Length: 495
Image (cartoon, rainbow, N blue to C red):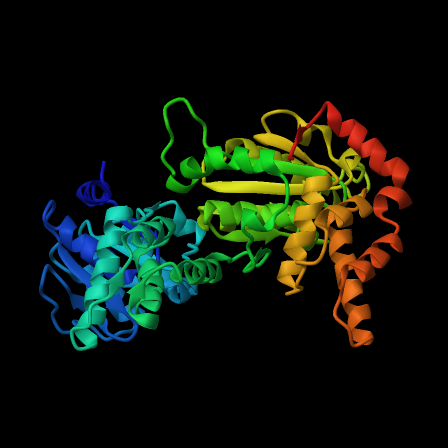
């Protein structure tokens, strides 16, 4: 059944109390006006500023009562015609015993007709005596057709307010924006669309980062997610060819949200590997490849000393991520938040957090692509690593000769160093066993040394910094080699 049919059925069956939690009061009034086409009732709206007004169809009469709640409830009880009464922001008055008693008498039809009371507000908590009489009705979120119409309406408004100047619209970007507005109420979506259009009178590629930022600020009610403004492109990531190909096969399905027959939606990947080899950069590049926002969840911020608060924080954070869909959820150094060794040391909090997280991973239907990274794989719980939790587990190894040459090129270009006289092959051979982070730091050190000498950096100076560096693969050779050996038969190489 449609939203309108469901609501009409509730009114037709003389439901005494309907609760609608929404900030979109105008939409509720409009919806009930359409209900009157299916079942005749008088329709009233009450607020503390305007009192009670009759708002049937296209008619809005002057206030019938003073705005105080007692006078209003007495008027409702005495009306000789069945009506629907939309009471806005009534929650503060529900704490009074007299209000509760009068409202309950109306709902139980004591001396009144079969009226329907509708409470409308952002968050409505009822006293137990009233909760048993209430039906909570959830408004459907607008579909893509409704959102597209709304964006075009806002473009028309811009044109009207700016002397007939038309909004420049990139149709492909418009389709992306409409898809990303899914999950918002019409009021919330309109606020964002208006901001994007009125900022520059256009809908184009430059609006996508701003859209992601505005949507995050609107929906991150938990406060435990961090919006990552700096997403990367895979062209900025050296190597990882197998990972890039794997993501390329899934990009269109994830971005469009339309599943080909027989396919499950892509859910996420786990990136294991040697420290400094680009796992975090790869996580950022996934969001760039999918062209969706990137949000990071820090498990350390979830833990709370009060019983049950940690689990609640996780639920709220994951719910916020789902509202932001489509998006990439990045959890860095997963082993620090879900270590297998802490379950008995914290009263079972870690085990309960792990249990809820595993359930969410298995059962979620939202377009939230999870990218988790980890360094110490032996600290992860076994149940997290079994097949089905992640779509795939990739191992990010130390870069090979070609990848190291690419890393040198990328970082030299990023720092505006003229490397035309450098031999990338020589640099690559000299840095065998280096991670990407160690190569970057060698370049930075060479630049500082050259700056101190008032010279430009050259290949000789850079080679000197490389030879003076002891990489992690040397300092912790046993641990690094053990991790690489473990990964050989258990994971998919990212390169």
